Image 1: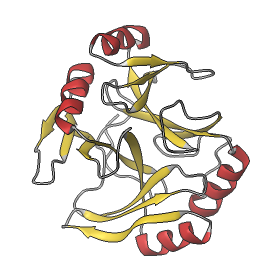
Image 2: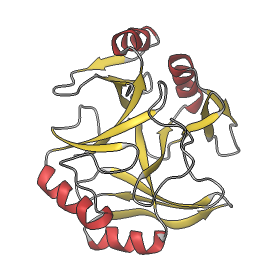
Image 3: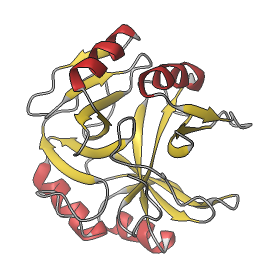
Image 4: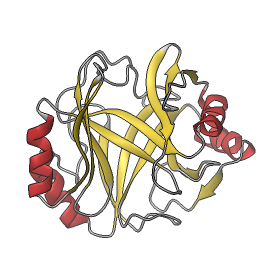
Length: 236
């Protein structure tokens, strides 16, 4: 589905921080048919699906394992960063401009899951969602679901017991994030595919490893760089 704009409070962008963005680009390019702009001077690449922006890949500043991050669109990033901090989040990178693209802030929610805020400028976010090869939804993997639900209701008015309005959906899963990971909670980014099993087989052939997925409706994998991601059948 083409996405012209992202309502405030919805996920507008996803990106992967990884020590070797080139290796990640090679894997996801072959798996989903992505092409890439860049890399820029900082190593950041924009992934395109049939010419439409779908995700970003950049060089991680933290040690591995890498992870996919959600970016939530907001109108006033300073006010949202203050609200996050007041609700118990840790502000890792305070709000700052990213050229004329927008303003970004990086946080760890109250349970330790990384999540970023984005106040759009010229870059409004992903231009496609829910199609094969694009972001479809995310699951919060946490040992403390009630605490997480309270946090996100307070800061973003999300109800993690149901999928909120907007694209994509957000769900809550009572589980420990599959190791290895430094986070007690972690967002699992899911990509749409026409055929979960065929895409799973191809991902493993390209160097990914399947991870036990419990109640997940599709498949969960760890890519060759160590980042966790999911596959879900594309919506009709």
